[in-house]
Image 1 (cartoon, helix red, strand yellow):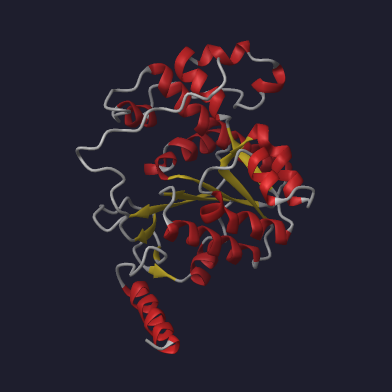
Image 2 (cartoon, rainbow, N blue to C red; image 1 turned 180 degrees about the vertical axis):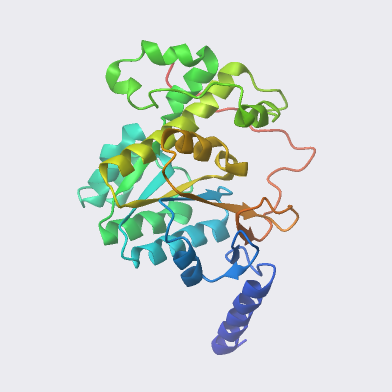
Length: 297
C-alpha cells in the first residue's frame, strides 16, 4: 500500500473515531456532563472556570495518556497559569523532579532518582516534557509507596513513629471515617480477599496526600489551576481524592474526567470514551507474586 493511501486511511479512521467508538487505542472521545461530544478547544473553554481538573486514568491506556498530554498542551495555550500534579511521583522524589525540570539531570538519572513508574517513557514522558518545555511546575503529589505499604501492615499509627522529615511525605491527617469512599473500597476485593481497616488507611493515605498536595500548591499560588493525573478509582463518583480535596478547600471548583470503556455504563459528569484493552489475565491464570523489595517498616 502506498504511504499516502495509508495516511489517508489513518486520518479517515481518526475522523470516524471522533464520531463514535474510538477506532484505535490511541483515539478518544470527550463528552461534557450533558452528553455533548467536545473538541479539546471546546472543552478548554468549558473548563475555564475549574481550579482543579482531575483526569482519571486506566493505567497504561494509550488513549487516556494521549488525551492527558493533548489537554495539558491546550491548557498551556490559555492565559491562566497551570501546574501539573501527578499521582505517579511521590513527595520524597520532588527534588529529583525539580532537578530534571531545571536541566540538572538527564532522563536516565531522572527516571532512576524519581522512581518513575515502569511505563514512564510511553505514558508520562509527553506530560513531563510539555511541562519542562513550558517551564511550569510539576507536583510529585503522592505518598511514598513503601510508607503506604507499612500503613497497610501496621495501621495509621505507623506514621507517628516516622522522623518528621519522613512524616511530611504523607498528609497531616487521614480521612478514616465511615464515608462512601470507605464503603466502596471495603466492598472491593484485593487478591480475592476483603480489605482490612489498615488497608483502607493505606488507600486513603494516597488520596489525602494528593488532595493536600494540590490544596497547598493552590494556596501558595493564587490564580493558578492544577491538572492532576491519577487512577480513575480515586475520583469515581466524586469520591476519593476529589472528595478529600473538596473537604479541605470547599471553595475550589473541580472538574473530574472519567475514562469509560465501550462495555461500561456512563459514570456521569465528564466522560472520556476510549477503546477496550485486552484482558490482563485469563480466568485460569493466577496473580503474579507480590514484589518483596520494599524497605522494612
